[in-house]
Length: 431
Image (tube, rainbow, N blue to C red):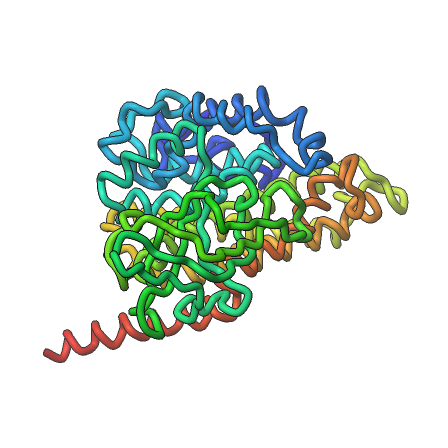
């Protein structure tokens, strides 16, 4: 379809289809959602982001408003809205049965454009899926409504001080009491996004022996024995990155998510979406940077001409543009493929692909932010004024490269998964 030009018309500031170019992926409901989320951000976020950054916290009432206005449920759902969630509101009035991976992409793209507000949804987007996909109906009924309404917050607690990308070797333990009614949880989790404000911790624990087979997942409400303290990171305070300590935390055994010994599998099942979401950040961050740098280059004069009139500057923009639009195309292709596959098939066929895509998102984001800082000069180093968004993006680049699987680990995973699929296909062909 073709859509009317929308948003900034500066080159590469928006996805190609925003600027009126035809696309096979987008339909009227995608336009409907895009317009609604952009208006919501402009009405509720844009003039408050700087104050929130200064305060180091987004007000709780804003999070509750997100639930009332229909942002939280689709964020928790991802690419498909469960039938049992159909009674919750969806921003833009999108019907649950129409929702797909491109709606999810657009929702995140516009929220990321909104700036600070996107930080408060990270725990939800990674913490809610295991509850939705693997927990018992009783557990879902007990905890999910308050999460989707914005009354309670959830986060994912996997990473540990000594086990980052190496999830198989987590050491936080959950030992059953003699009567089998509780787990006693002891251990530490680190770099837990949104943990400071979370009421529930979707936690990977060791209930069995070493390795992946000994890992289970528990939903742990904030209770006696849980301590949280902030972890300061370069990207800022709004993500509320947290160090969590569990000391003899007594968790009801019925809070086990799914089955014992399957926690590692449950953790892996969400990686495709988590890594895509990191790519979404890289894309919108790149477009924000190139938009502001282009606007500056068109008016800034040096050596008797504007920057954009100088071939070396146009070369920089061309190098950025080809990478941004290539990343957009690859991302759309992967979203389309995931929409056509079950979650299990998506993980099997595209786990390695999304790992490599996530790497590319970080590489492109880093390259574009770096080039735009150089184009802006001193303005690219300041936290206010025309270069502020570029400076903020540049500072946040490590959050694209490390979380969701660090770059080198993801490259190796992508190649190993490709070889595995190739060898299987060759074997079948011989038979």
